[in-house]
Length: 110
Image (tube, rainbow, N blue to C red):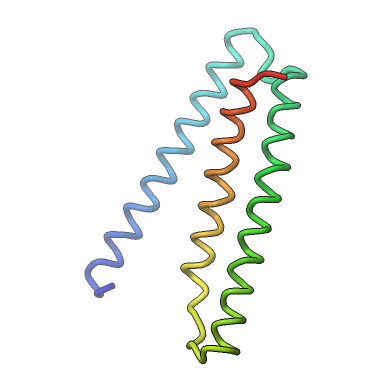
């Protein structure tokens, strides 16, 4: 990035984090005012199942990335890869798989 783009991108990222935090706090406050419990046994079971499965998916994804880098470096003489992009990819895999599995298990039921 250029010297001009980095402060703009940093400000945008900080703004998005603040907006997401405000939305989460608003949602928690609204759910507490409704009088219903925020989590029951079914919701806890669904979240636990989705978290466990997304942990396995993310771990296997990271292992696959590592094997790809090792094989590429040892057998094909590829350069070392910057750690930023694989970290972003693994975070996306963890989070997206959790969201999809939470939706799927919630829709599927028991």
